[in-house]
Image (cartoon, rainbow, N blue to C red; front, top):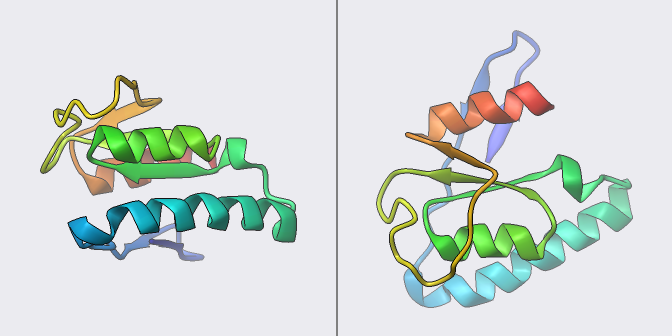
Length: 103
């Protein structure tokens, strides 16, 4: 999760997901984004889904968000889905910079 501060700094709080609960969390993520759009009139096209696997990128695509592939852990090499992220970065701080450019 990101928190943008008034002084233009960003707090980054990574969310670690247990692999066995991943499918359930992906479903919740899509429901979250769908609910967010309804509740806050937020355009999902202006939202980002950040992850390090092709499954993360597919989840972002399903939720109709922009996607950022972080080249850590799986680094998109799991080959579970044939997808391409909108952005590819080396680490989470670099992903924050991408998000800040578009916010």
